[in-house]
Image (tube, rainbow, N blue to C red; front, side, top):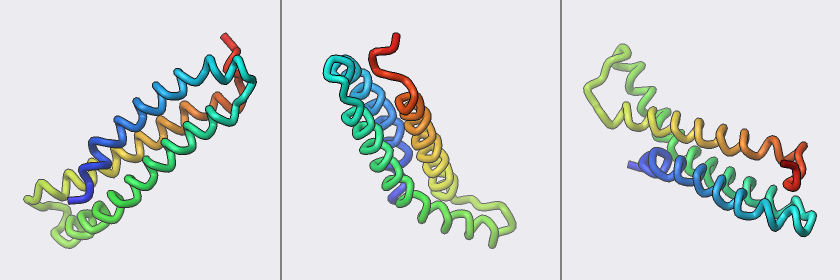
Length: 110
């Protein structure tokens, strides 16, 4: 079952991204270097998207089984596959939303 990383690691990557970006904000302000902050968000987003891609493959198979069974299945694993993909999508969107303001705001702002 390759969906567990998307279900468990994706939210942890969001928290890690927020922590590392916040820790580097003072350094970015002092050195006027925005590249490091962008690199942090890009790395965490890339890791989340890799985990999401693995989960997406499993989820597509689960959705195919649901369609062939008339929308009903007794397999709990199908639900977990789809849920892991949704959690991965939410995590990727959250990282992108945290990265977006850094394109417009200076780390020294505030």
